Image (cartoon, one colour):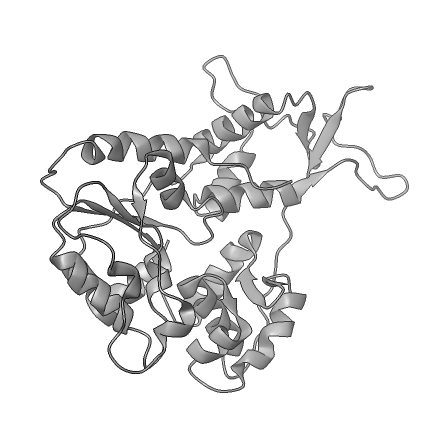
Length: 330
């Protein structure tokens, strides 16, 4: 099933931004929203389209590494003193971690510093950490906004709402205990702790949690001969989906840290072609470790494009932190 649109986040964006965007001359010209990696809905661009704001197109990736002053051709036809909201949905599309790859980002920041009309900027959390250090982006852009993590209560409510939208009549039970994960007490508090564990493992990122949830569902359970069913097994005739523990993925170790450097580059830039990934890696031949990461279920290929598997984000984040490459990122 394709990932669902994350309705709670759309509502939060509206609540946070509509008053600002509806003000003819807002006191705060620039707004920055930083999101965790892997946003499947392109939330900021979707917000712009829903509310008629003008999207600022990023440069071509091939132009980002061209030596010399950046052309900034996508900004030429925009009146910096005009009316209406401008939206730059993905700041990470304006740079590459390459010796020639920061010119467009710096040019964009100079342009934003003199912009007279309101502008909303979106950015991936890994890219924002890099942009602050490499281009002093926080000297131009304001302190970022982000959504509150999805804890157990929020995940329970969101998944339950998705069930109702789909007309789902199945009962979702833990394979280990038979508990109904959507059962609540008299106060509406979830009785099962499974969502607490899911919130912790997913770092509160809704699309990571949803992917882990989907990967945990089973129509039936295979049991060894003589093995007893869960203590609270499903009643006869009940349409049940069983929930098993999400599989643990292992990041392959390489003496040159190739695997963690590849994973960091993909989190920093988002999906990259093979040539783009090779260009942003710090040493030659690191790209040779891509097949091992595909086999491990950490990344996948779509044609010539390579991207991170959302369900693998917890293991990827932990491996990068353990390698000392990056810390304190969502």
